[in-house]
Length: 43
Image 1: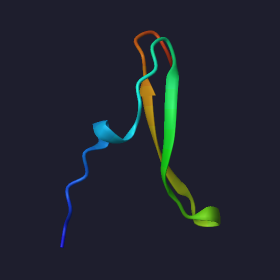
Image 2: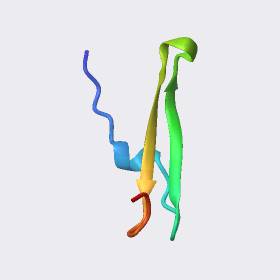
Image 3: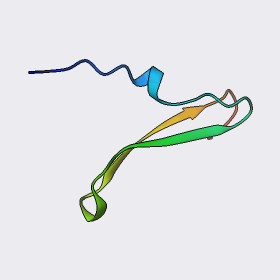
Image 4: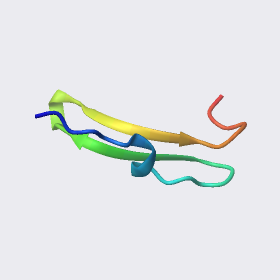
């Protein structure tokens, strides 16, 4: 069965900053991390 996943609800927002949250950590196999960028950040 497929389950919907609302990405926006899983990472916080930080004014003037970049925020990250690891949602899946498989050790040596890798991980999945979500990022939230405020305007003018990350580039």
